[in-house]
Image 1 (cartoon, rainbow, N blue to C red):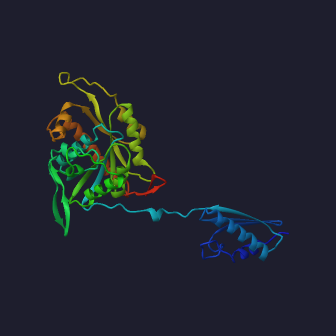
Image 2: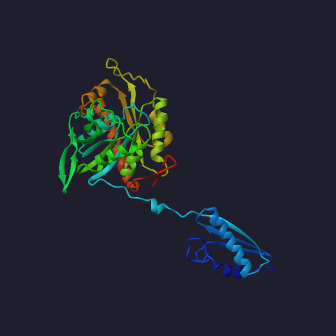
Image 3: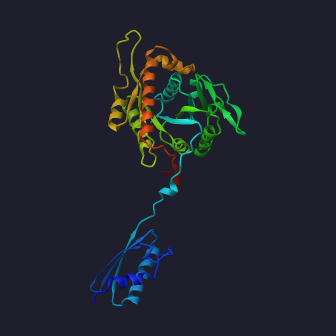
Length: 378
């Protein structure tokens, strides 16, 4: 005996899946019905993987067909689970800071590669070029930006903005600066769990009167951890600059830093890689270059990952000395160091312009916690 497909569909119109108001035919749950001799095969789509719901649906379909069509029907039910798309539910727009045009995160895979030094010199070079610049020191556990800008003993003042009390960033060398270092003692360790650190960062970002900025540089802590996710959750980062030294161990961590920003559910554009401590040139041998940590490692990494190489900074004692006294080396005029940072900064600006022309604005990410680990969503 062969059954009529229309009779089967008519019978299925009398039942619905759990949680759905429409019958399973009208709701589109029935994908296909095949009849052959006394066999009836029903393909069904469900949105829940719950076993008891699937068993109930299978039993209802078999019972209904046997009762309303024929008790002799050999009914087989194939259930396909398709979870509903949650993209719209999880999509949140970035919370831009009013007046700030571009937010550039400066990161490194490991500590000690000169990330804060590069951040400080990028900032003063941008200011020399006429841009309005701010630096957010997001290295909660090891803030060094106040020292590098010679504002270690300064404290942000309180100003009234639209009836609200806000922090006024400290200004130095034409750059606005905020850091957790302004609120701790020199010998005081910041021993905070992730939520406390994230709250402090949000206050530095949103409870501050940054004013109009062309660039905010965010000096991230080394690695790929909770602070990084908190920043990307709080701010729509325009792009990231990754700093590395040429040696293999630093490049391996830099690769992870790039991978973090390029993760599918983060997707912060990487503007490029800066190689710090590229080579050493002694003062008495100005034409010699000694590649103490290796030659061209960061450039090779950028080519391998197909991201821009922004430039190299030599290993020069004056860069360290300038940072220690709070006067970034890029402030020097007509010096090889200033020229190197000017070239890198021009490349950062160029890549930022390209990024803004070719890609949509970055969204802040949504972070949830599942089974003790962080899950990142757009």
